[in-house]
Length: 220
Image 1 (cartoon, rainbow, N blue to C red):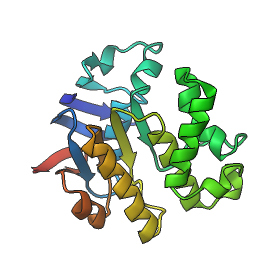
Image 2 (tube, rainbow, N blue to C red; image 1 turned 45 degrees about the horizontal axis):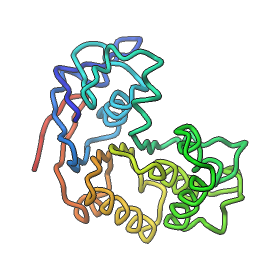
Image 3 (cartoon, rainbow, N blue to C red; image 1 turned 90 degrees about the horizontal axis):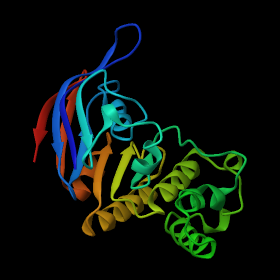
């Protein structure tokens, strides 16, 4: 499903976030990305989502060459990807349910069905009583849960999560990991960047370790 072939990502000024990465992630696989802060975990996820492009090498996602993907084709690629990033990227002029339902609106799903699915996933992350609240009134952990709900609402084939439990207490973190497990069991491909050893122990899966932009260890 995802294949990196000698992928390097270099930013202006010469900093290499990733260097010569070769990695294959199979459809339906669960993979944890580990490594120090600045190891390249977030960059690797952004490349898969075509938020950024490789400087060199070849990256293929679902049979599409990300290097050659047109800007018009990017939204279609992302329709099958759930994205959970540390900065949330919520729309602050919309309330919780409007943020969560957005991917379904973009996909053209019936509005009534969209709202039903949005409320169901908001309930699962424990925020049903806040569905009319705007993000500015939410705590960091609550904003994270809204981001997770939005990523899961369209039942994506691929879920990319960057420190998804970083702002959550232990109870909610366990609940979110249980949701991830459910998606994995029905065939969703999960790629999770985390420092949370409890999450890794709870879900199992393969561990890919990054060190200063290089894949140093791949552990089954």
